[in-house]
Length: 205
Image 1 (cartoon, rainbow, N blue to C red):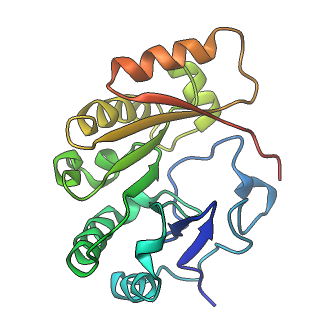
Image 2: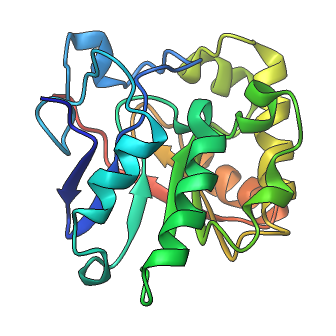
Image 3: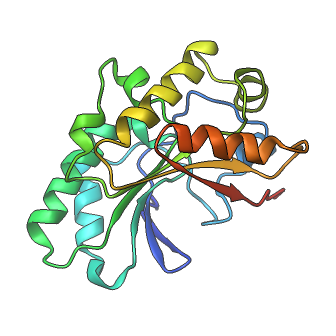
C-alpha cells in the first residue's frame, strides 16, 4: 500500500516522491531504510498522481492538524508544480486550512529550470531549507549534490528570493560533526538571506 500522507508530531506529512538530487551523509536512505523517523515505509513503487494525492488529503480531517508538510522520503521540489496545484485545491475546499510547509534542499529553481519563488506566494506558508554547512566546501562535503557547486549557489539564491514571498523561511543544519563556531556562522548566513536558523538533532537510525 502506498503511503502518501502520514502523521508525525501532530502534523500531517505528504510523501510525493523518492527522487533526490543529493546524497547527504546523514540521510537514512544510505543505511537501506525505506522509511524514516516519521514513518516505517515511505518508499514508493511509483509516484502518486496529483489526483491520488488530493484524494488522500481530502480523506483526512485537515482542519485538525497544526500544519501540512510536504516532505516524504525524497526532495519534494521534483513535484513542485503538483504541490502548488494541491495547495490551490486544498485552499478552495477547506475553510480553515492549516499552514502549508515544504521541507526542501532549496534546489527547486535549479531542478525546474526557472525561478519558482514568485509562485509560492499565497500558496506556501513556510519553508524549511537544508543549509547543512556554513561554507560551500562544508556544504558539498555533507550534502553531496548532483550539480556540485552550482547547487550551493542555487540554494542560497532560492532562500533569498523565497523570503520575499513566503512568510516563514527557515534554514536547517544537523548537529553532526559541527566544529566550534559553525552554528553561529550558519545563523549569520541564514539571517543575511532573510531566514532563521533551526538546528536539528542527528538521528542515526
